[in-house]
Length: 94
Image (cartoon, rainbow, N blue to C red; front, side, top):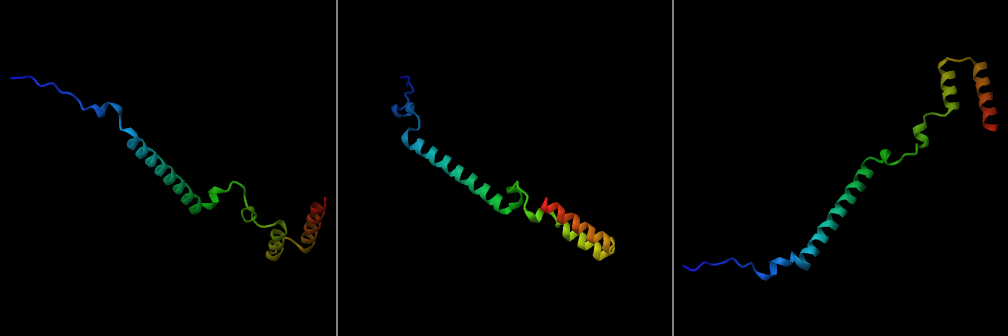
């Protein structure tokens, strides 16, 4: 019996070649696009977490509105209401 030695084909020592490199680049590009789309979807789905700067709606009612509500509820007298409005008028002009 003659012993047969395994001789690998010549083309296997060079790696995947140009086609393999192109496939890797396409897969990497598709992964980057998928991550970008996922981030964009998350930002649109949760807009409050995307903005670090609070908007005017997040700051609550204005001071004059609070005073008017307290006066309407009877928590403060007319004199107190007028004094608070005068104090706020002085603050805004200062």
